[in-house]
Image 1 (tube, rainbow, N blue to C red):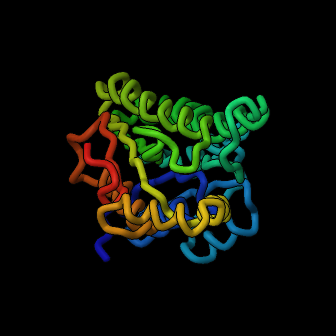
Image 2 (tube, helix red, strand yellow; image 1 turned 90 degrees about the vertical axis):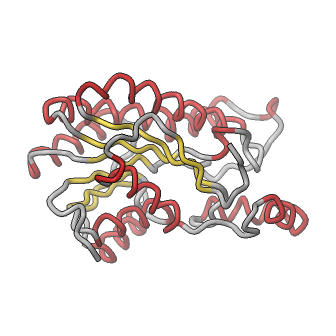
Length: 253
């Protein structure tokens, strides 16, 4: 496989399994020095064993943890070429009527998704400004462009916020040679939370979902990772502020 990211330092959050692990594997196979983080130690250790990346337990809801991780990477590598924020998800939640959603449930999803993206971008921005170069990719969701298939209100709100943050940061950082883009996956059965969502749909809901997708199947983590790799590649040097749906043709816009 071509070493198109040879010599580049890449940070990936949410790397313990699923899409995050696939992103790490894709970069590592193409020569990047990958620093992977998550809060699930056993699964993150497995990502490290599979890909040879450096792993760190980092809660993106903790400002000090994020800043400390970025400082450690910078001290060791001297630069940061790309940040990919995958951390977040539904945090094990399923649909409830809005009047039954607690503040804690709402905040948990916002912290991991939108606030986590904000903290990570804030931490790497000074480095990328000095370098006059960098790539930032947020893994949002089709929910952020439309609605949550499983009805989780906070998740839809957080992912829509990530898309807005993508556009604003692309505008702010473009003058420094930094591109900021977002990938919006469709339904991917890639971790315990998405399996729980899939089961909660029941057979009828599962059939309806598959029928709504042009390719009539759910996505694979590697297919989402391919879009992330594109945004970080030289081929995307003039692409910024964009949201790419990778959903099998479920959304047509």
